[in-house]
Image (cartoon, rainbow, N blue to C red; front, top):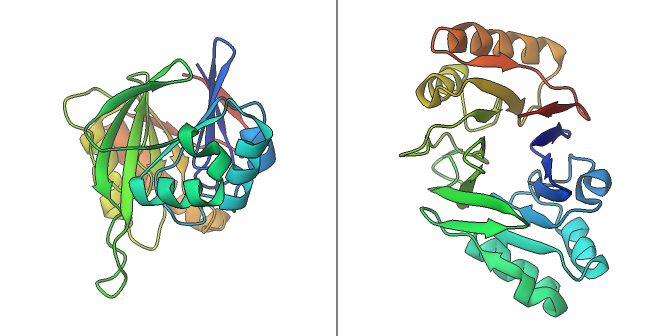
Length: 218
């Protein structure tokens, strides 16, 4: 399976001629990320994970495109794209489904706490083909599975470095790559990723940075 990293939290997975896009947000290159996609998975409603206009346009342009998202996000997309309503599905934590030839397991349920004064929204993490885990904006460790490829939210208003390291060392995936990195400059990114790489290696995780647009086989 080919994994392509886009800016911030968006990734694109390809196998056997099928394309799955996760979290095409406003900080990401949504045009290339969504081009030719057969399905889209959205973890939560925040704009850095969902460019609503881009997804609605993609649904209008491709009558076969399917979207899975938390119930509130799915409802908002159905309201914005009524003609595509039957192709927009609720993603429910602790369930499994198949989309575009990819096997999906959903985990979590809530966005990580930013501040008690800021409401917590729904967040669903996705494990794709028992391989790639995209947690969205959470550090939920998926239960009952062995993750092979972990996408690590490297920096966010809701996290600190120690929590990110603990997430990586708890999941213990053989390989890991960063997501949620658009808010850091090069110095901050190097500092945080250095901790994750060094401490993650003690627990068997090979962490490395992917540049925007870079692809790897996983």
